[in-house]
Length: 137
Length: 94
Image (cartoon, rainbow over all chains, first blue to last red; front, side, top):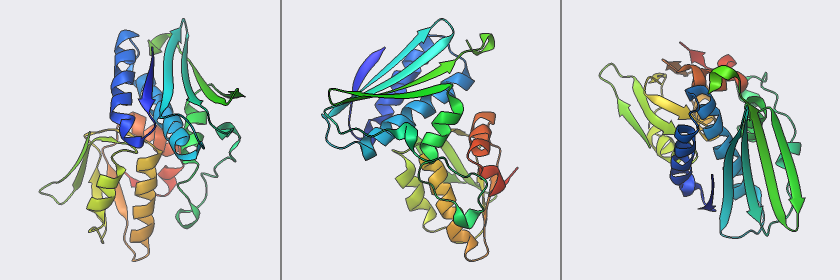
């Protein structure tokens, strides 16, 4: 499934409906569905907040290949920004030293099996792959 | 969607999905919260880093006056996210 969404945070409701349709069609269990929603939201909001330039839409693609889920977001006519290279978050810091920033990518890296970045012809593409166990589907 | 309700026992109930599009609603509500309180997650289905960031900011603000949030009845998926974020060390979770 692939669809374009407006480059704005308020598009999230429509994005969650899109994810729900995919989850139902692909008969994916609740735990993996939660991970897909989280990965899609974090990647999409990162694009909206950090990518410079860009068309008025961002493309989201969800695909299931046998035992893998593929989540892919594409942003067109933007400057390069590799979110996979942001520094890791120290989750052991005490409350007073914790910051909310960069937590989103930390979560995505923790819940998927692979996160990759490509940039070509001013199109930025981030792909997250989640391996499915037999009990996940 | 997302909503906030106050229960008869004083607990604050978070309902639905606390995502980046809904977090301002939570921020507006919690501006008037200035003392320790219990947040009931029974009907909260989902939270993202935006929701975690809001909770972190609220916990920091309350801690400056010796108060804190207590979080109860989290589902297992949200609990996992708290653990991954290291938030199980900075919140009182039951």
